[in-house]
Image (tube, rainbow, N blue to C red; front, top):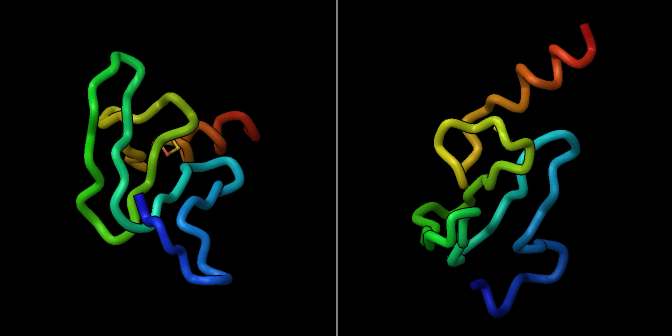
Length: 70
Ligand code: FES
């Protein structure tokens, strides 16, 4: 967990219709209770439920959003 986020640079960001971005080191627990450590400077956590690589976002939310508009 990023204990000292810079002012104006939050370490958790919710993207409208998309993932939750985590800046820095975090430990994420999936629905099955498995723990996943972030490995990138910014990691995207799926919030739509459609990703094939949960808990991470794989971009599926874009297709789901498009389908809901069609
Ligand atoms: S939020 Fe991106 S695949 Fe679910």
